[in-house]
View 1 (cartoon, helix red, strand yellow):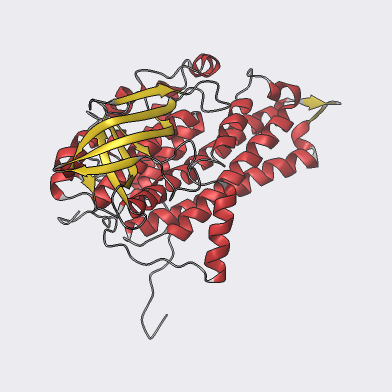
View 2: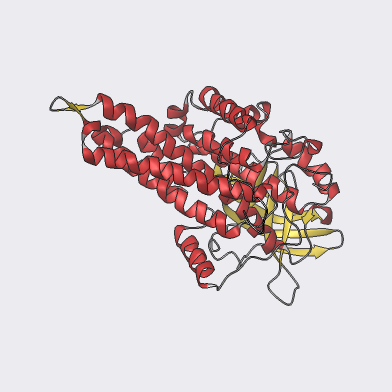
Length: 407
């Protein structure tokens, strides 16, 4: 009761639609990702048909309005899909993150009506796949100091430079690229959607990764690539804001995916701890094993609440930079701790690929680096707590859900 009026009650239940999305995503992951995964991971070979499978299942259009070919589902649904994909393998969730989170939601947030009709529709229905280009060899956390340059030339931008650690570098059709704007008096950036078929564009895979081995990661290069001005998101100088908006969406998918790894660790560890016996007793009866299992369950439940909160804020059209930073930071910590303990519970067996926990460990480590290192998120949270940082509404906010005509 507040001012004589009833306030809305808290409701932590998922809707029937959410449960259906969880069930269908889980079935997709089990049937389309799991078969052959161990071999693909060992050989570091992506499934070349995965993106087609994702599109056929309708998952490329999660959280996109129906009028652009999407599923018209809310933003919590995207988190659920990412959680279930990563429960099987991180590389599948990464593909979902860069296509749906970093690219599609940013285009939905910043795109004009023409851009959404022209570019978002084929992305949502799976005819095209999107990726994101911000990181450079000398600009990771220091995202303001980009070497990639865009020069205005009439109705085009001429793009030169390179990006690295780009997921789907060899498979994506469109790349949302952030570049420094030449000829400006201050450090201004521009956000451009680049077609991989453009003259002067090329890509090269990165080999020898510790984790996410069944996924494609690489470098992309721009040699006088001409990008039409109609493919610019926002205005000249908005590039950095566009990039930070994209990271909010990407961090949401990483945070939700991390819960999938924790759940996978529980899936592996609980039956193992009940079956494995030492001196005639299940190791699951040992208090130190129970402590590790309990910590996994706690991380899973706390982490879900963190990402559900962000999904709710997205649905309400609220800015959520602090909250999604917290969710990404903590959930990735929870997931790495769970994977580390999962290896401990399995003992020597956890150190080889006979059991999946060694893959969970390798995959969970990368998430503590990409989409903002744990150190960056520590500083972000401290600055919010100290009052050094605060959020203001952007001139382009993510559309509220349910989607209206203004989406």
